[in-house]
Length: 379
Ligand code: P1T
Image (cartoon, rainbow, N blue to C red; front, side):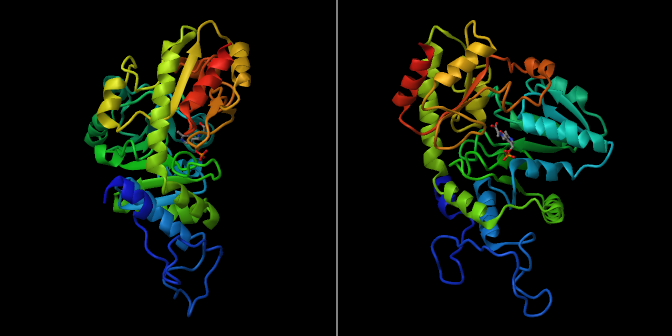
């Protein structure tokens, strides 16, 4: 099945009750049992729910995975991966990553004896030099949030395999339409499905996709044992969102290209971070491993400081100042004071998250209207 068909039919079956074409919302916490433990595998909704099963099958199908596991948020999905580790284990992560992921690593899991190293993953010698016998996980966000750096999944997977380290790719910014990391050698794919997968800024949801039977069993155990599961209504909304994933991402990419070119040609703009520009540091690797360059873009304006950048954001009308990304509507944000404020300033500056950095989540409105909105904010 090709990707555009998988978004609609991947892993789906007609509902056995009435053959409804849309998956029903099984809004129930529990199921009547004929005798203890006897009800087609459905006993309690933290453990299993048919709407969630349909979503998990869709997740697996999108990433060419054997297993899909749904969580109540992207961070809940990451939390479960970290619970695979034991005290003394070490993780090597991209230094440029979502602030909430950094916070979970450093402020929650360090306390339990997990050690985190942060590095840019361009230089594979730097990565290799951090590997020890305690290294159990490589955390790769690509493209990164908010600098839109792109790292070579295949090259990094060669290193992870050599040292028997689990390679996890946070594929939130790309979506499986643009990149399928398991095909490139990753062991687990993680998504904040809140973003492109659900796609309409109306649900918070996390996803893990993988092929390894033993790790999958441990993650299903954690999903049930820790209990950070999504409700059936949210599973339904995410399934519905996924049905248009391919057409939405096509338009996100088309609009991002037009806006990246507009900003790149604008004399007031200092730097544009979008991997589809041939001048971007990661254009080559992005062209190799991605099927398009995505709808996330960051930029800085010449001579702008914190105040001027905030003023620029306040002048935008179609771009809404808000956390999150990947919905049909365009959003703008100031990473230093919003999504990445939990990262200490000296650390975020090293990754390029300056006080003047502006992040755009380019929606699927008419690109000319979006460009007019930006033009107006430059006046
Ligand atoms: O918000 P949640 O569904 O828990 O997902 C966390 C998360 C994980 N990984 C990446 C790359 C993310 O961007 C996020 C969430 N990011 C935002 C809310 C944001 O505005 O960047």
